[in-house]
Amino acid sequence: MHWEFVIAGYVIVFGLLAAYAFFLVSRGRRLSKQVPTDRRRFLD
Amino acid sequence: MNDTTSSRATRVLGIAALVSLAFSLSFGLIFSPPEVFQADSVRLMYIHLPSVAVAYSCFAVTLLGSIIYLRNGSTFWDLLAGAAGEIGVLFTAFLLISGSLWGKPTWGVYWQWDPRLTSTAVMFIMYIGYLVVRRLELPPDVRSRRAAVLGIVSFVNVIIVHYSVQWWRGLHQGQTIGIDTQLDGLMLFSLFLGLVSFLVVGSWLLVHRFRIAWLEHQLSAQGMERAIAERRAEGGFGLSGSGA
Image (cartoon, rainbow over all chains, first blue to last red; front, side, top):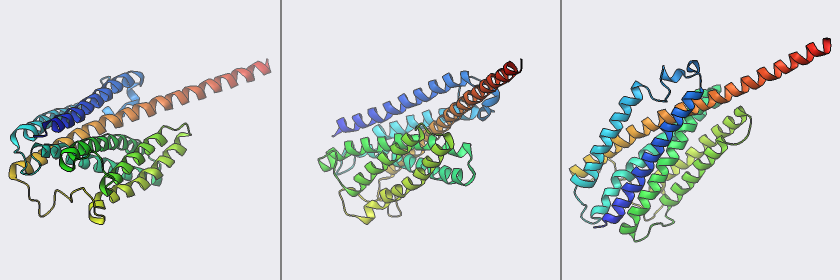
């Protein structure tokens, strides 16, 4: 009962989560290439 | 050094996030039983409450970062506060979406101007405002100071959201987790699993978002240094030209 609400909730939340995670990883990759390694000390 | 924002620690955290999410999904959708009154709609609780936990934690980090930034001007804390604010807004959106989808079968409406719902919507808007302030075209220190003040003021609303079910009467139920929690064992375990997995995912997102903010800051500083160097070179050329 009420599965349509449950499925909608899970699909929206996990879909947005996956999209945001993908956005972060790809943006991080793009920015990392533009910054010299000595300025990326958080990765050490 | 790799060309990403990941490191060994974040890879471990990422794997932990994926594994815990898989378990959380299985328990939330399959293994946990339906509730007597709410039937299967109770399964939305396993994403709704964990979203609250992550949003509150992120806003607490924003508060802490803002206070420390105002005290010592630390770039690290300023950027961490901003990153946590963004993740907090994302999970508040999850909270509002899952809450209204849970509200429809439970209360018969997607939205009610109930104290808890209204204060949550206000919290969402306030932190969006915080993110907007962080993107204003202002000198970086002025922008960061204004954002820090807003990051501190906005946290007052987090407290209002949390206690709204005790302070005012409304449709929203009281606290689900407490000393007198009356949840079935498997339901409580599924909720706990959801909390753990969302907190791990939230931490993974926060680390990556912070590193992106750090890279953006470095790029901006690099651009500034280059502009100063160019201006100096132009000035030097002008002086030698006038002397010739």
